Image 1 (spheres, rainbow, N blue to C red):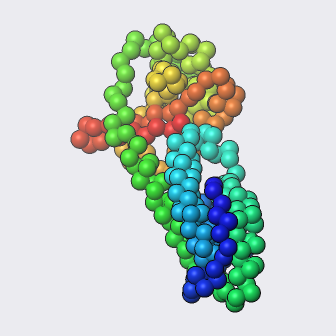
Image 2: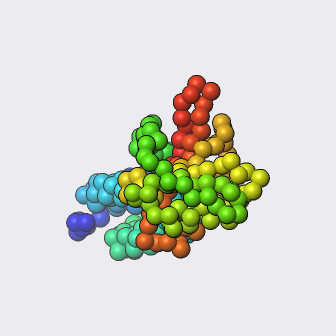
Image 3: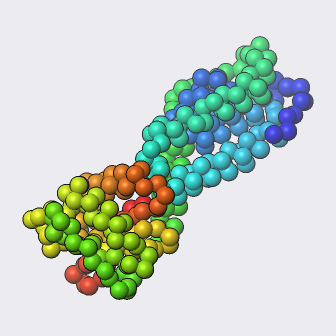
Length: 268
């Protein structure tokens, strides 16, 4: 960032207010990079650094878009391992350092002119608004990239392995999946209770799709809206990939509608 060394003109600040390092840090912690951008940019404008004001907005918006996009596209098996508050704490240190290096001394000079500090109600309110805008962008982005049609179930010559305990079957594409790998999938489905003796008519398809080992399971209508079911398969996926990190796995859950169409959900 290019730093403007022009002396501060206190009268140019007018009725504008500045925000303290505590306010800046809180805005970054609660509202993320977009909130920190707003209050840092406001400070730059108040102390008369218009060039820094403009670049703060440009860089801050770009960082927000990039960060949310990355968080939206990384596999859930990775994101679940990240601390839940990482996204918030990630912005506190850089926002604080920018304030201390580029704004603190100038604001100290403005204190001599009786400059006022912005209210905490505004900090809280605008930070919450910025957080909401960030989440809206994330949801819109996910909606755009989520495919409407996940593709038809592939047709391949199915080899079968029947699990000894549950008597359920794994049908797999023997040209890309070994019998050992098919049994591994079946053992995990038994361990988590999907395959069991009283449900021995159930089966699963295992095949490669986009270089991932895809495990396709059929469910009754409306089962894909069951969050507990989805979370259970996420836990299975995490455990499989922890024990077999050399392969990439995903579940493809499907259900047939009354109109004969397929509803599908990918868990990866």
